[in-house]
Length: 179
Image (tube, rainbow, N blue to C red):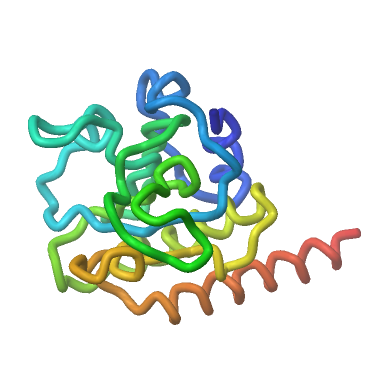
């Protein structure tokens, strides 16, 4: 279980909201974590509870993290979340990556632009997780890269990965100056 998640996000300077029971929430523990899958909620009216507990159509949790429009990061599950569904990526098992990827959802309506605070939180959230699991930005996928029938997270994944790399590099340089 990823009981380290909230602390890793805070260490990246994020405003973290720990949802009650998040440490015990999830459908079992992860296998070797390969990386992150990015999503959006396709609407602003998706409650944090729905992400944490699921809906009538899908069991929860639906993600491990929810990034709100104001940039606040809600940690909803330390265990496996039901977020990816069927799909394919050459580095991952076909149709079964929930146990290998951390799911991040961002509140937004489809095709709506992310507010600056929220986008920056997306970058920092991914960077924090990658730093903890010792992976590069190449281990961040958009849901649409896994399942071509999906459109989320409705942003350029190449740009997101580039911004994550820049953030990781800037933190590495600032950390080395402190030493």
